[in-house]
Length: 140
Image (cartoon, rainbow, N blue to C red; front, side):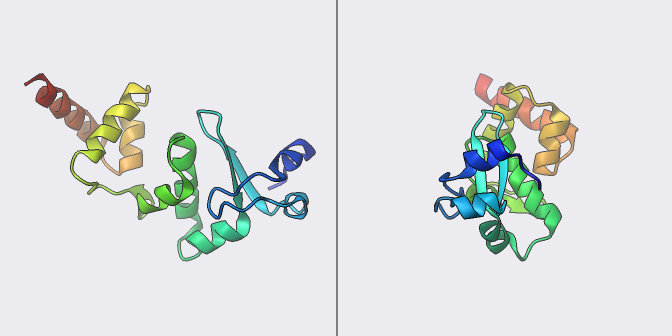
């Protein structure tokens, strides 16, 4: 990626979200980092070498899915997103209760059933049914 001078300067001395070491001036000038920003305006800087080491065995498509989860979810770290990854999707078999809480929270933030379903690897109808069951259980 070709980053502008302003972003390169911003990257200097930022901590890598994976290894927690700072990005040196040399690494920044050589553009040896990935950058993104979450919806919550949190900057994410990652050494390319950390990225490759963490996800070297996965396909490029899966790497980007994990990175996108971090952008969508400001509270997710790079490490946490990899634990939720399975074949390019969040695990369908999340621990009991955790999955529905995530779905309800995403819906309350304005995401559509379709968007949520794509993240979890389920249909938009399944998302709707899970939210409906959650609300019914809360009403009892």
